[in-house]
Every structure is written in C-alpha cells, then in structure tokens.
Length: 504
Image 1 (cartoon, helix red, strand yellow):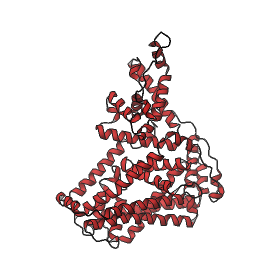
Image 2 (cartoon, helix red, strand yellow):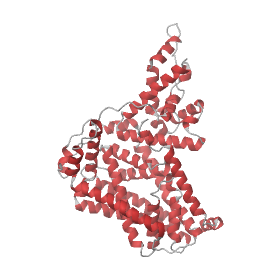
Image 3 (cartoon, one colour):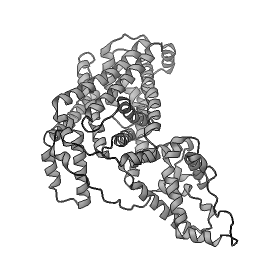
Image 4 (cartoon, helix red, strand yellow):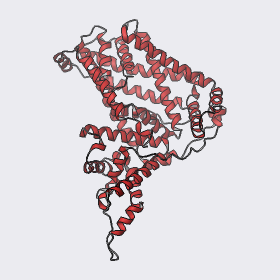
C-alpha cells in the first residue's frame, strides 16, 4: 500500500481538483448579482418539486442496479438492492473524496460481493462509464436542435463524442475477437515474466467483463437501460424548473443534464463543486434565463444530486465495505466461471494462476506516521537511532501485510486512508505527517478506538499488525526485558491503549 497504491488520491490530485473547482466558481460568479441569487433561492418553491427531483434521481440509481445485474448475468448473481447499493457507493465516495476514488471503491465492493477478480469489476465499472457517455451524447443530439451549442462548448462535445465512440468501438472489437487479443498479449516477449503474467490475468478479466457484448440482445438491453438511467436524471433537472417559475420544458432539462454531466468530466473537488454549477447555469442561461436565476437553479439541482445519494452511499458502505473479516472470508470464495454460462468461450476455461508474492517496498511517509501513532514508543526506552530503525521495520512489515491482502480489500483500505488524510487535512489545515507526534497519536486513537465503527474497522488491520510487529521486534524485546521487574508474578510490562476495549 505504500508503493503504487498510495499514489491514489495524492495531494497533487487534490490540489488540482480544488484549483479547477475554484476557477469555475470564479467564472460563474463574475456574471452574478448575489442579491439576485439569494432572492431567487428565497422565492423558490421546494414542494413538491425537490422531492420529485430526488425521487427521479433515486429511481435512476435503481435502474443502474438493474443494468449492473444484466451486465453480470451468467458470471455473478446480485440481488437488486445490493446491485443498487454498490452503484451508489461509487457516487457517494466521489462526492466525499477526491480523484474519483469512488470508481475504485465501487469496483472493490463489487469484487467482494461477487467473488469476481478486481480487474474484471474495474473493467465493468469503466464500461458502464463509457455507456453512460454514449447515452448522454445520444440525448444531447436530441436537444442540440432546440438549444444550439456553439464555441468552445461545441468543440468539447465533439471531442467527447470522438473519445467515447472510439473507446466503445475498441471494446466492441475486443469482445468480437477475444482470441486475437489473447494471442497478441500472450505472444509478447519484451515484458518480464511477472509483468507478462499480470497482463495476461488483466486481459482475461477484462474479456470476461465485456462478454455480454457478444450477445446482441443483451448488449442492446444494457444500452437501452443506460438511456433510461439518464432520462431519469434528466427528470431531476426537469422537476426543479417549476421551483423557480420556469416552464416545464423537457428540452431545457435534457440540455442542462447533458451539458452538466459532460462538464463534470474535468478534474474537480469532491462533489464536482464549481464545474457542476457553471455548466448547469450556462445551459439554462442559453435558453434565455437570467444568470442569477440560472445559478440558483444549479445550486438547487446540485443539492438534490448530492445529499440523498451521499447519505445512501455512506450507509451502504458502512454495511458492505469495511468489515475486514467478512471481506477476507468472502474474497476467498473466488467463483470459477462456467463455460456454459459465458458463451462457452475458450478464454473462460483458462485457469487463474496465483500471483507472485508482493515485492517489499519502503513505507510511505503517511503509513510510517500512522504506524508510529499506533505503536507505544513512549513506553519503551529507546534512543533516537533505535527508535527510527524499529519504526522502519514495523512500518515495512505492516505495509507488506496490507499488500498481501486481496486486491479488492487493498483498494478499499486505500480509499479509507485517502479519506482519513483528506479529513485530517481539512480539519487541521495541515497534513497528518506535519502534525506533532502527540497530535498524530491523539487523532489516530480517535479513529482507531473511537465510537465510530467505520473508522475502527478501517484501522483494525493497522493497529493489530503494528502492535504484533512492534512487540516482536528484537530491539523492543531486549529493551522490555531490560526494564522488567525481577520479582515473579509481577504485573504486565506494558500498558496497552486504554480504549482498546471499544474497538470490537
């Protein structure tokens, strides 16, 4: 986790997203009279339009769950509610964490719930995003005649059309001729054995994820559901129009929905704050609506988009995503795909090979700081050099154990640690590593031993593994033996964390 995975949600990505969001906020604000914005929001009629908007958006997510079940038909079986929960987890995490970590969280939960390889779950998620893009562009074509788009926005739409269409055609080609892709991949000789092995497993998982496209009826049904999904989302945009006294015009809602969702493809802060408001306001203003009203409309639509799904996703994540013991037991049940259930394609009969053990990597500064906060260094007499050496060994051991977890669980842990780093940075205005050791330990104990079960479960693997490695280190053992009482039957040598009993 301290190597490549720890780069996910890096500070650079967070800073870039915040700057982009701030830029779009400035672009929107320069056209606004804030007194007019507050007046429009104050005069908005929330009932019954906002509940209708939220209901339409929620129905769209239920349809997304149906689409996910259809994509996975023959490979995994999901209950409708579970499928919808998995979809919503991704949206909720994107609303909370930077760098679109929700796509990884969603793929990890899908892998954990179905037993499918993480690479296949991630491919499924990316394929759904491509289908979403094509559906949005198809709906945009219906509205472009009513609300013509010109200038840079027209150029962006054309570029998005080429990107999504090209990606989808490449996937179709891979689905139609999987043998060719397999032969080209297996025949490469420039890669080392480990990389070649990993690429072969990735190609196999991706081929299984797009297998449904070889069945035209199922593929068309999936695309039809994608159109229904985005019609439901357009219903959210439509329902909010009368709240501001605007006409109930489906063309306006479709234009606002398509332009907004194409606009939020740019990097931004969690929840797409800034790009969402700017592009939504621009779409409605293009229909002749005053900028102040158009921006107020964007604010209310964003609230209907953000709050319900975020709360729903947090509840689903708490239920499905962080119980490490459950994740480990389920991940061991990797299902073997049956040829007769997947078009009897020869690729499905290729056996999965156990991956090579992870290469030991030096721990990152963040993981080192977390491990240091988890270990009771103050209770053991060590000089600075010995303390640093023990910390390096313990942190390396902890990261190695985390790297050895199933990939889907490792991704969930990465998402959780990214959330920890983001929340600590936002609440303390400094990174976790830059805080004083006493503050780091206090924060870690509040997360690892506090009242919130979600945070306790996140750091359970760290605290348990770190304490095991710490007390098993020969330098620590020698120091403890050196300070041990001589009389027999004395009390325990080291005081354990006083709130450990709350970590169940």
